[in-house]
Image (cartoon, rainbow, N blue to C red; front, side):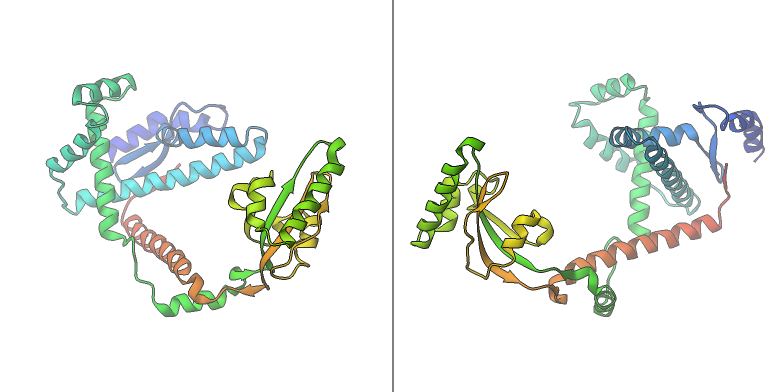
Length: 317
């Protein structure tokens, strides 16, 4: 503990200057028992995620700042969890055979042909083999401890599934839908008359018995042409308003007249019609069960971490 206090005094000026300096070189973020998590540790662990955020929100500095703070806070909690679990492994007297670590390292070596190439690659990244081995050891301990303490496939009772379905019925409501096929004909503006004529000829052929899907494969310029113009089940929001207004007036098996728009000429066929309804439990049971399993796993993990935290020394800065 004297070591921790001395280190705190040594780094206190850095912590005090954090708010005044645009870039923090280092400082204490959290103390967990006898281990220190520094801001440098946090920054190193979020570097790739931070790069992705900066690319995504480059034109939204306020949003980027908020997202960065959220990412940093979440990663600090994650690093605290890791230290708590590693401390539990150590104090509970668990043992991890060195052969287990060697097996993990051997698996890594396969990517580099041999250990010498691996070591040289690590050195080029400023990482010593000893620190690499320690990271492998810690990662293995974390995996094994979480597997042991937090079930990844908790049992969810049929009652819980049924209750979730009843309480979240609107989540499973589907709007009016049609199973749609579409032929899209596009051409330069000065050839629009010819395009309309072609659409009428295609419609006549379909009325005479030609297969709509086959005609779509031959004539359509739409992205679904190779699938016979098949759009699958769509609701009104899937289509432009002008097309949706026509599609949802067609009965099952019916096709439209040529539809002239600024983008081109369309022919639509509705294979089936499905009115708005709540999907039955049988259709969504598996998805509900997975949702509840994920929620339960998170709950059990938090419960275990909270127990570890209650008997540990954790101080945030």
